[in-house]
Every structure is written in C-alpha cells, then in structure tokens.
Length: 94
Length: 347
Image 1: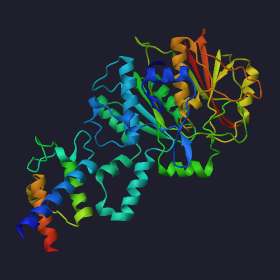
Image 2 (image 1 turned 180 degrees about the horizontal axis):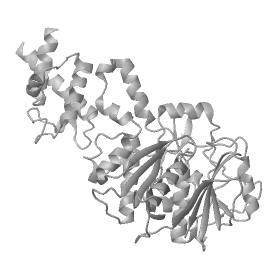
Image 3 (image 1 turned 90 degrees about the vertical axis):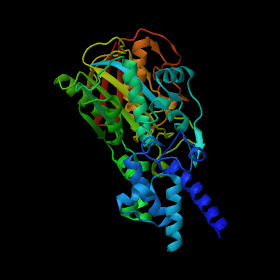
Image 4 (image 1 turned 30 degrees about the vertical axis):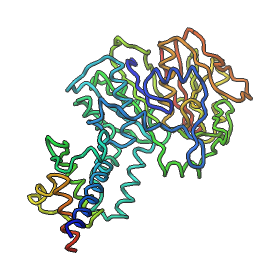
C-alpha cells in the first residue's frame, strides 16, 4: 500500500516538474533540476504571482482540481512535494 | 530624422552584421516545413541569455520584436533610461496571431475560466511593444500600428510626427510578423507560392510568386545626428509621380500584395533598381527590411547585388555588390495604382 502510494507520488512529481517547465517557460531549467523540496516561489525556484495563477490553471486542466483559498494555496504551492501530496490526496478522494 | 541604429531578426540570424552578410551572400534556399517553402526564424536565433529573465513569458512574436528593438537601441549608442524622450512604434500586419488563435482554442478546449493568463497577455497586439518599453525602461509613448499593407510606412509617418512636434527625441520604429499555423493556411490558400523557393522581384507580373517569410526589424530614428549614423529619412508619403532622381530605387516586390505590374513604371526614371525580398522572404511588413538594406547601403556606400531569375523588361539592376557613391535612395511600395508610397532616404 505504502509502496504504491510512493510510486504514485513519484509519478505525479515527475509530471508536475515537466508541466512547470513547459507551462511556465522555465527555459534554463530541466525538469530533473527541480528538487522535490525546493521552495517554488521567492528565493527558491524564483516563481512569482503570475506563475501562481498559471499553476492554478494547470491543476484545473490536468488534474481537475480547484484551488480557491489563497491561504491554502500558499501551503500547497510551497514545493513540488506539497503540490504532489495535494494532488494525490484530492485525486484519490474524487 | 536621422537613422542612428538598426536591429534585425530574420531567417539567417540576428543583427545588422548578419543582414549585411546575407545581402552580400545572396540567395539561400528556404526551408521546407509543411507543404511549402518558407523563410522561418529558427528557435535558436530567439535565445538571449542576457534577456532570458525579462522575456521568459514572451511568445515568439514578442521575442523577435524585443531582440531587434534592443539591438537597434544598442547599435545607436544612445542611452535614454527612464526618459519620456524615447517613443516606441511597432508596425505589424497580423500581430501575435499564433498566440491569439491558441488562446481562442484554449477557451474552446478548457472554458474561459481555465485559460492561461500569460497567453492572454501575449495575445494582445501591444504586448510586444510593452515588453520593449519595459526592458528599455522607457516612459515615452508606446504604440502598435496594425495594417495589412502599409503598416511600416504609417509607423514612419507617426515617428516623424512625434519627432517634429518635439514629443520625442528618439523613436524606435519597427515591424514584426510571424509565420504561424493560421498564417501558413492563409498563404497556402491565397498566395501563388514559388515551389522552387525563388521570389522573382523584377518580373513585374500580375500574378507574382512568393515565399512566405517572418522576422522583425527596428530602426532607431533620432532628431539629431548621432555618433552612429546610417543617413536620414527626408520624406514618407503617398505619390502619383515621383519627383527627384535617386541613385537607387528599392522596390517591395515579393508577391504578397498581388499585381506587381505597376512597379514596371519605375524603370522609366532611369535609376538603378534593387529589391531584396529573396533574402528574407515575402512579408507584408517586408518594407522595413528593404528600408534597413537602404540605410545600410547609404552608410557603407555599397550597392548590394540583387537576386533574380529573369528581367523581362530590362530594368537597370544591381547585378553585383560593389562600392558606389549613393546619396539618395527611394523605397517604393505600390499596393494599387492609386496607393503608392515612397520613403526617401539621404546620405
């Protein structure tokens, strides 16, 4: 069970990294360069508020998930790990 | 107004040196992608490490415009940070149509609530000019002029007005057009595309052939003569009869504007004739690239060779590249017998 969850999370992380690089036009960054626990905004990967809106659209389009609460969004968008966990838990629930 | 800088992005590279080399080298076969030959701008040309953060979100259209505008600015050697003295005018026939149509497709595919905000902002015609303004930290007027056949000429008239009325000391005036999927379809349906990839600028045909192209050129126009000077623009106007006798006419024959028979009358003025569409391809804003060629010729005092297959009316053409005293060049675009434009450049 735990092994299956970890496998699913790994797949989501990989997909997320590819989607971020492609949809946010991160030219100098390869998906494999993004660390799972790297902070996405500010000093980390350097994403900004417009990127946050792009991620909201990306979650809706690719996973059918809506993030409306910005306070919740801050926690979800912290890193690839937090995003992947949110997707895993909410996709599973639906 | 004086021409103090030129920047260019076209099928063979970036920068005025690349353009000069292409003019010297002559014809090169276009690439074949899809169902017809075309002069495309390679993705590698649009990468610039020094600007990568500032144009991360820019689409292809905006990138072409930004790179050529920044190059024209740098070429001029003029610095106008946070100044209201620099105006920016982008002329385009179709704008960022690839992004615009992609944005519309996304609304259909994902609903209007789930479309990319970045794609929306890039789909606006003035996006490219806004990128340029932000990167150069300009506070002057920034506009985009959109017109099918005479966008560049109208942009030049506007630039001249801004400089004449003292609104700006310098104007970055340029054009950009891209070859997206929709444009490719339009070309395929509407144009007589040369399957051998050869535009024939001096055939003066009523059904001329074309080879679609894309790219961007920006010209830094200044009130005063600067340290870098390509010459000056003395007139941009509509005409019925040409007054004056230039050393050279450059004509915009590229198969994009239909019947080219009226260009034949230019032969009667007895001056040398040139046209460089075979170097960069057929574009409705190709006038700007021919203008850049004229400015380069005045600065270097060199006549660049024309590429042609046949010359049925015996036009006096620039058959070779050679040093030549050039005091005045007229750039001509004829849309219809009653719509003829002339841009006069002087050394």
